[in-house]
Length: 271
Image 1 (cartoon, rainbow, N blue to C red):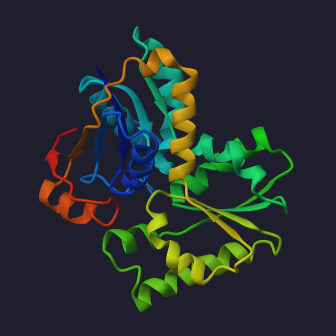
Image 2 (image 1 turned 30 degrees about the vertical axis):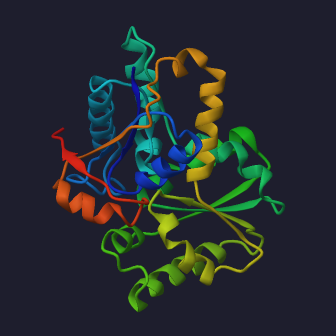
């Protein structure tokens, strides 16, 4: 039986994996973090596509039937190309899904003012993927975007709760809110950002909703498998989860506890 693969450029996808495992506790998972080549946020479309395709193909080779690209940058810069150019060449039923569409499918239902803020990496914001996808489902919505170059380093270096860390978080919150006084919903469009939720809410007015993607993606995946029982039948359901990193496993395991509950014992994998 196959597993569900979860891929990210680093640690952030662990927040997506954690939410999915709560929704689908009996399914088997393989997590792959490309920590040796992170961050993806400032890389070109071509490089992100190349790296993401390598990771997806490796997860397929390891027995995954379905891969979740749990990285907003990779979803923005590579997912559509993989779905339209690479999957159609395959004779099997393997599939790849991302984290942007599930969020944009529901975001309009959460905003009363019809003004939504997107906080993400430079790559995600410059791709304009959120605005493009939101327009398909909620053309009446206005999307305001701002990228936060310091947030991922703050998370991965465990500096986000420091005075310096809070300075950058406050600065970026003020920047997105200054774009329009009617913003009433903010999407954390990077899987690292949920770890900053306490600091983010500290500087965000109470009436503004701050949305993390994990629960949204997890619910969407469960609904997808309910609609595709043929795919679900191919997936193992022993509750197993295996972790791989392209960097040093001991370093990955040490840092992973910031993102997941319990200990992680990863293995090295070369892409």
